[in-house]
Image (cartoon, rainbow, N blue to C red; front, side, top):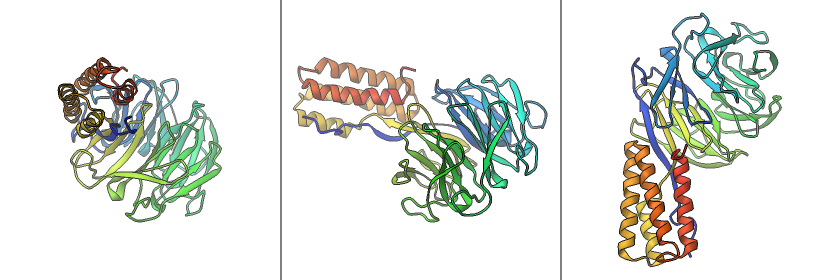
Length: 378
């Protein structure tokens, strides 16, 4: 029998989009990212003073915003979040307010003003929404989190300057996990801190450094559907992954502008398929996407060899998988989906004939996982 996961899918770079500029699809220091249930990606394009929306492959869909302080205008927005009704909340940083829009960019409302009182802000860097559609604003230079109802009604707050459990030092990233826990990238303290929705402290982890589980000025944090926590470890040009208790799992990255490398890594988000989206400032000014990749050719050949599949069948499967990998590397995800579908169809044809049924079904399940990660049937 095939030892799981001998031909298992691996996690890696899927695609990227952006580049410096002011045209549609270009960015000037993109930061906050959010993904809706359809896989559309919302990006806070900070110094273009707008929000841009893309499909899951990076195709431009729409944008809104211009520099200013009037209704629907933005001034260096740094954060973006979505609620269950499709409303978009923007941390309108230099206007010291939260702006609410419909998904098409129609302005709905805003709240906030400069200051330190309840409902006021000193440069909010981030915003997040829980399953009840309550809104959490990261009030960065007041070193606190403020909680609001969806209509902007103030609910509660927590935090002050310091290094203690419920204290912050210029926090720059916030998200809400599937369990409604609030995750904060406590940038100046080089830590991640977690709280329940009422602000009660739960856990923290991280120290200054470049080793496993260490951080340098983390600017973003996000949790996936499995409870894994992804941290934009900005000073180390990498993404670190932890389990929900803060135990280190893995990392990837390195300094540079090639796929999978980072310079000025800032925002991070996950979607319902547990793909990871990361934003970078200049020189790349881009969004990169990571997720499950097709099984490698080496994995496939090893599995087929172990199973004693005939050379002809092995070559046919290999060719289809190589085509899928090439398409993913080129960013043509529709083509990759087609190649993976052909790969699955041939496995089904071999099942119970040249491949033991149980082994074929395991390979099929893994290939379907990859197709789901790429959004093939969405």
